[in-house]
Length: 147
Image (cartoon, rainbow, N blue to C red; front, side):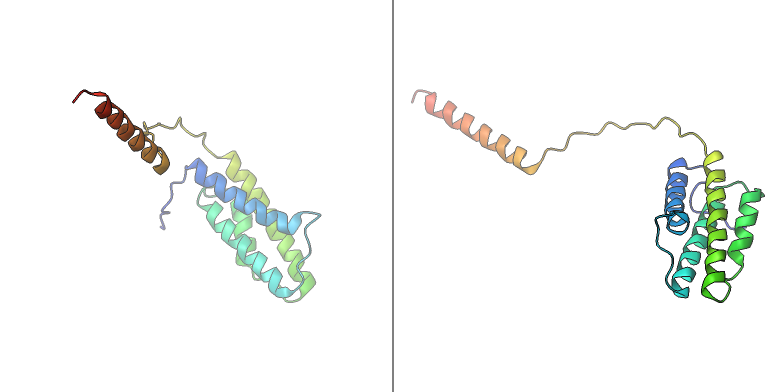
């Protein structure tokens, strides 16, 4: 069994994966997105969607129907021809969209983050100004003392 390097329940990582997958789905399904011009474009988008499906498969509970159908479509090759390839791409994008919804439904609410106390790190010009002010104060003090 392959163990993922990332935690299955990391909500930040899960959200990032879902956002990236949703952007690719929008490239395929959005009304204002341009149609893929060549068969190579169709294959490239299909490959990106396959990658999103495998990444989301790591955060979705196994055996989910959305995961199963998305993996079946991802394992199929893109049919020859521009139009059949675009139809397959649309189906793959819709399956990815359902998988995104499943991943978001199964996400765990993030725990309250523990905040470490972080010290203020001054900028270089602030340090220079502070040193200058200390030097001027020392000069004024030295000049005001009797000899």
